[in-house]
Every structure is written in structure tokens, then in C-alpha cells.
Length: 472
Image 1 (cartoon, one colour):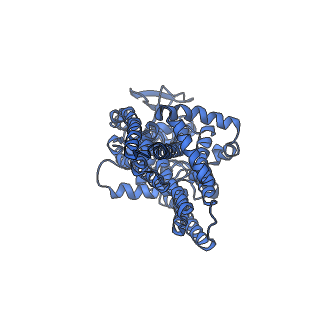
Image 2 (cartoon, helix red, strand yellow):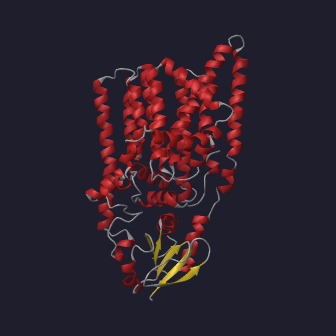
Image 3 (cartoon, rainbow, N blue to C red):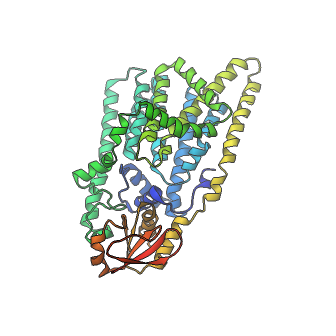
């Protein structure tokens, strides 16, 4: 069902960037996500069906389905009956907030799926003392960090889980070495690709005399030390300041304000209370496992909600939904065992029916996603710019609108020799006069841009509009 609801076209904002970068093996916005780019490149080039944009969108859906399977496997490991374990996975993946994020390209579904798999393996190590589960957990955790380094927030919960049993030194050291090599090799992609893009002049903006480091081909130019640090650590946005405040009253309040209403809407009729009861059972049985799962759920949410420049904190909430779904399954299973001793099949059927109704409620709320899967507003902007501008034009657009234009230019090859420059209209005022000697210069803007020293004329209607920059 998730795959059937996936959007079929390019999107605006970060989505359009990832849909472009994965295909051209470029460098995306901070924090670089090299593992996602490499997986996305292989995924889009291996799949022969649908548009490149739809293929990347489908990767998010597949990732969340894999996370749902991991939740089911974890519930089974914790001795939850199979029907309730399956319902736990469904409760997670059909929650409206989760489902919606599986319809478009984003790094976080894949990063979460891999990181949560590492967490589940850590629980398996504690539960069954399987050394191979521990080593696999460490290596899979390394893969998660290679995909998205913000997964370390969730993986800190895994460290708490592992502490419930004394780990063997040699296998842990070996696994950490493999994970470290994997992370280093994956992140080496960023400076190596950046240097290659620059030396081979793959980024068309370089022909304008613009310094290396523009989005899509070479964001932040990580071939340099400062560029690499800024890209991978996101230093210009100050994440470290938010990290040291994740346990403050402000961060807790922001998290409750952001995720509380969503969780109540997605898990109605007291299901959140049921989830809390289930986690309580787990805490009583294995305190460090329960605490580790709570840390894995809460820490990313606290960071996302309190990070002042995060435009979409909801993408840090997957852990909340996963642990809540697991708690619901645990509470339901223990209830069946406690009150269904004489007729366990009847008790199980009743509880499964009640949880099934909750899943049906979520599925009904998600029907709207099927109506938006054919949204073509972003692709229509690319077609409008192609019609309104001349071949070889320099098209200046802010991030939201530049991303689908880059997809049109570099993935679909539908903009000819036009150069897409992601910037504010006033960022390159001093260069416009020189560019106009060899190019048409166009601005994509919601309203006529104010460009001191230049005139503009509208080339298209719609939202946003396209304007040509003219001499005074």
C-alpha cells in the first residue's frame, strides 16, 4: 500500500535535491549523506521502471516497510505472539505521519530503518547472548552513520542496550574496526567526488566564474577542509548548541508541542497509554533495554524539535512511533496472557480486533496520500522555465524552486544548456552585467524581484513567476 501511494514526480525543497543528486552522484545539502547518495545512485540506476524521482520516492517507502518488519521481528524476540507482532509493524508504518514520509524522497526513512535494525540486533544480543548479533549490530550501526550521521542520536540508545550484558572484547573491537573503515570509506566519497567535479568542470555554474561549492554537484565544496567540516557537521547552522540543550525544559516543551498532537491523532483511544504500559513491562523485565529504547526514541525527537533552523522536525520522530508500536504490542500480549488463560484464542482475537480497528483508522486517514501522488507542480515549474527562457540562459532561483529545476536540467536533460544557479536574486548583482553579454539572465521569484541597477520584465505567470533581468 505504501508503494501504491508513492509520489510519481519530482518535488520541491530537499526532496528535489536528493532526487537530483542521487542520479548524478552529486553532493547534497548538509550533512552530506554519502551513504544515501551511493545507495540512491545504485537504486535508481538498477531499477528500470518509473521516473528517477519516483524511484527515489519508492526507496523511502521500502525503507519504512523494512523498519516495520524490524519492529515485528523485535516484538517476536520479546515473546509477543505473532499476530500482535505483525500488528505492531502495521501500527508503525500506517501511522499517518510515518506513512506520509514514505511517499517522497528523504534521507531519514532509510537512515532510521538501518539504525533501528542495529538497535534490534543489540536487543537480540542482550536477550540471547548471540555474539554474532552484537557484531552485526555494530557494523549495521556504522552503515547507518554512513547514510546519515544524525542517526548517532538513535544509536546512543543502542549503547545503553548493549550495556545490559558484558560484551566480549575481541569481537567488539573487530566489529568497531569494520564499522569505522566503512564510515571513513563512505565519507571519503565527499571530498573525492568534489575534487573530481571541480577538475572536470561538471558543475555548469563554474563557467560563470562562480566559486566551487554550489548545490547539486558540489554543495559546500568538501574537497577543502573547511568545506568538508561545514558540510558534514553543518557548522553554519549551529547543531552543537542544540545538542547541549536537548534535556532542557525548552527542548522538552518544544518536543511535546511538536509531536504530542501528532501521536495522539495517529494513536487514538488511549493507545499512547497502552504503549506506556507496555514499555513499563519491558522496563521491569530488562531496565537497560527499556531505557535504551526510550533514549533511541526521545533523543532524536528532542533534537529535531529544539533545533532552531530545522524546517521539518517531524522527520526525527520515527523512533517515537516505533517504540510506541512496540509498547502497544507488549501491553496487548501481556493482557492476553493475564486475562485469557481459560480462552486464550478468544482473548487474542478480541485484542487483535481492537488493534486492527486502530490500523484501519490509520489507513482511512492515509487515503489522501493517493490523491497527492500525482502532484506535478514541481515538474510544471521546470516546463514553464523551459518555455519562458532561451537555451543557454542563467536561471537564478532560491532553494525551494532551484531543486526541481536542477532535476529538470541534470536528470531529465530537459533544459538544454541553461544553467541553474541556486541563490537569492541579489546575491550576484555584480555579475549580472557580465553574464548578460553571453546569456539571458532569468530570475524565478514569487513577485517582481528588487534588483538595484537593473530592470526586469515578466516572462511567465503562475507561481512562482519567471523574470528576465535587463540593463537599466
